[in-house]
Amino acid sequence: MERELKDRIEILQGDITKMEVDAIVNAANSSLLGGGGVDGAIHRAAGPELLAETRKIGGCPTGEARVTKGYRLPAKWVIHTVGPIWSGGNRNEDDLLASCYRNSFKAAIEIGAVTVAFPSISTGAYRFPLERAVNIALRETRSFLPTNQSIKKVIFVCFGTEVHKRYQRLFKEVFT
Ligand code: APR
Image (cartoon, rainbow, N blue to C red; front, side, top):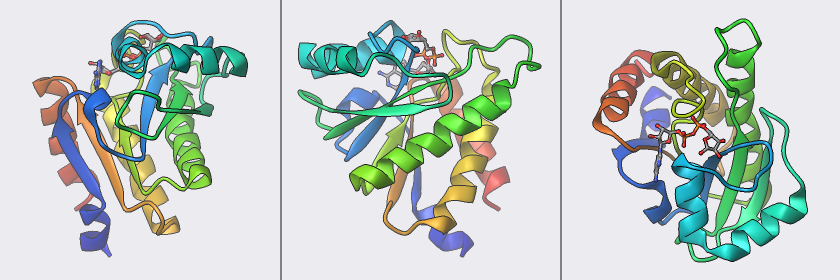
């Protein structure tokens, strides 16, 4: 079981907008109207039709996810999820971040995505402590994978070496 689970996860350093997967997850804000960080990169790469579609959705509450097409991105779909803004850890941030992963997986199943790539949600502008966020990401993935066989590959795309190293180290702890 462990071997099989591990084979369904990949951790790499790179730019999520370049990923040739069925769905990439966007760390959006509740307006879904774009922003900086990975949100800005995804909107720039996808082109203006993405904003036209997200505008019609009319926002997304923290912890939930909404799906759009990928337009000019190599990915067919974008799963927009809104992570919690870190405010000390007593405002349900852990559960809200865990919900981002759970709801993104749920959305991926609904659209029939077989390969899904995640950025490190909430660990940039939203200032969620990295170690804590990576633990949540990996543990939610570890709980989800045995419940579903349709998603063949979950890829964590790390934008910098520090994040990459953290995922690699914590992966060993969570999956062994
Ligand atoms: N590919 C992969 N990861 C990326 C990319 C990229 N092209 N660009 C940035 N990242 C990484 C950041 O380095 C960080 O590790 O994504 C992670 C999340 O950081 P943010 O993009 O700042 O997202 P977040 O912390 O969830 O804050 C969301 O920022 O961009 C705005 O509109 C967004 O208001 C929302 C807020």
